[in-house]
Length: 240
Image (cartoon, rainbow, N blue to C red; front, side, top):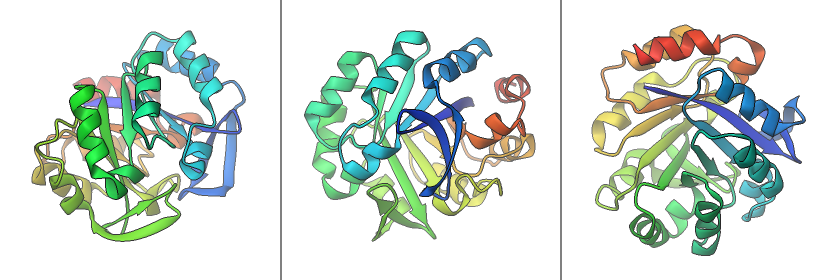
């Protein structure tokens, strides 16, 4: 399993939200590129970046911060937030983003996901964010009637590189991930699944590792910043 440290970008800073609430943000570093370098220096093999402002605006907002991270690091980075058309996907791929994450458009314009996955093999992931099993969009501000597993299965033949599954009620709340739902999704589809939301302890990482499903990895943010998870120990645990 791969550990993906999360760098959530709001107004150019590295922040964490609680359950996706933009009003409940904590700034952990006002230099996202320095934070990214620190994660790389600690041995991380990937970075998980989110343009929070972009997720609400529907277009990139923290582009300068993302570019600074790309310039400062050598490890691959996946990016989500405000990526809703082919031009934006192409822009980020050309700038060096290893994997773009399509969330809202996966619900509203699934054909774009298919086109992008075909145009950029291995570089398109689907972000599925859910409350109580139902998908939420537009920075988690809007809930739909679409069920998580149904959406994931609809992309089985699209060439999607990964599914990033977030339980919104757990995100940033330090209450542990929804291991059962994550494992069920991973066992229901052939696409690699990355766990996100609430990963806040070494025990959480162990539970995901041993959940009985072939998870690709786990994303953690607040716990790494708070020191609840020791990055070196976590990397060693997941590398087995």
